[in-house]
Length: 229
Image 1 (cartoon, one colour):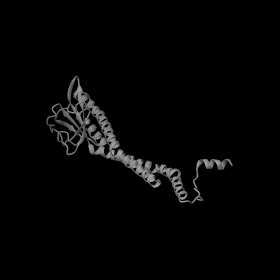
Image 2: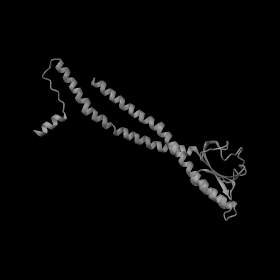
Image 3: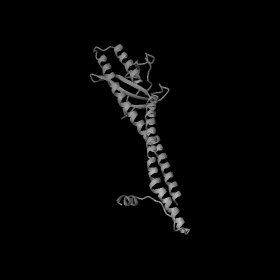
Image 4: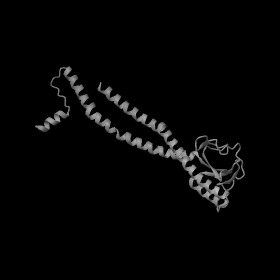
């Protein structure tokens, strides 16, 4: 009976470890991905609004010129590792951060409101990319007019890499905690399993007629008694 009890305890312990691993691989992974996407989308949207404000100043005849904005876009693109476009209302790219390789390209069926009530979209953005990208847009406005939009596209693979790095930390932490929880198994073995096994052996000896057999089980009561005497 004691072996059966101990085997069940070991099985339950292993199941606990397996369920912990599955939780990190599924639930924690999804939560981490959702958080990173929303965080990156919010950050990119803020950056897009900063660029849109600069472009708005240019359209209103203020000091900034197109070369200055292009330099700003190129520097920011390298910093955040994302592709940045400035498009007009019809969807034609008039500035980009790739050295002009996308200039005058038209975004077919361009719809700035395609993301709906979200501040971002995920996909290949009108089939202009070979991989999924996280895309945000900010309008270039001034004097109650919309002159165009600033678009920022970040590869989803970049977010996935960050997600995997975080998950590796979670896996290592979970493994350490699982190892530390071995103390529970050790305490159970010392305080429950081994004494119970000795009692079982003693009971079998008594049943076999060996009444002189002594069961050597250290209990808290015996320890307290020995201390008081």
